[in-house]
Length: 424
Image (cartoon, rainbow, N blue to C red; front, top):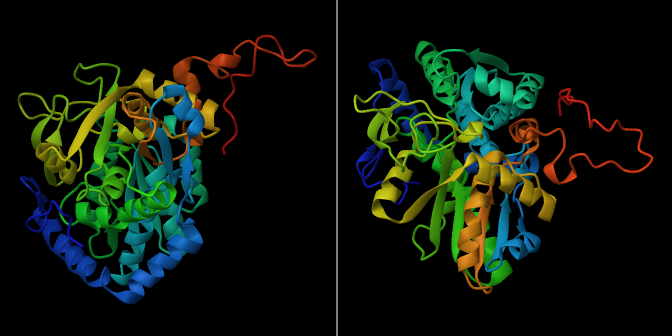
């Protein structure tokens, strides 16, 4: 199950490897051996397939977004609906695979990190389903802007540990999860949520997420009779994107990864690693990284917690250098507009992460003929982001309805309450 760009174990061109403390080298080798064994085992694969089908809700459908396409003109649009997966995002594909692997390895507990909360929710759900105790580390900044997902994790039985060091976001949550794993390697498996970290994690995550691309390619061929002109996905660490792209790397389909352009190009204002980053080592892997001239990791920013990370998965770095995948960026404002646009035109609230992919696709669609298809991976749903969307827009209601009240409505002219909605 080696990635196409993986020429030697653990490396994608000059990126990847195992840059880990000595205490983790033996656990990483144990994990590599277990993954090689169980990923080829028919009973393991059958159990995982059954979980994906009857618990996660696979296959997820394609939705033709003709009203969205009509706003843009040009190509037709198909959405791969990972937002309809149980727990609300693609993260469950990998979480189920890794927690099932942890059981085969006889580990008694799992730990995980989370940024937007979706990987934490997915791991908590998988652990509950499979009867494994779970602890999730999350930066306190992300906990504040993703409060509904914090509540979900706790309801699912996970212990959620706030991290208040550093930037108090995903990078720091990974630090703490790796520290926990280092101290408890005999009993614990670390369910890393994205296609990064030391080998074998990028390959493990890619393998468990490749179901997205396999399904999407078959569905597009049934829908259109051919592959799409282009496929687009957002890229934080890059798990949803590499899952989609894996089915198309050997084809002529144009592939686009979309990073967080944030507030602007200045240091600390974005998380676009391919727009100002350089090769470096973070969290056990060599990859593209936002860092200063002294090699110190720079702070990042994105309206989307899941894209707010200074490094990218090593396979994405290799795909960028080879030119096989083109990477662009989308600003906070553009992503917020896309969040509203998809909601208004198709009745779908996308995750703010996915909204970056929606925004980027507009220019691609306008330049393409009407006979072309563009496939977008809708990696997650946006109910988790609604409070943050309204806060960033400075609104109590969506912009087009601000100040509008129905005659006879008892609501105050001052608009709805500014109180936080109940946990969803």
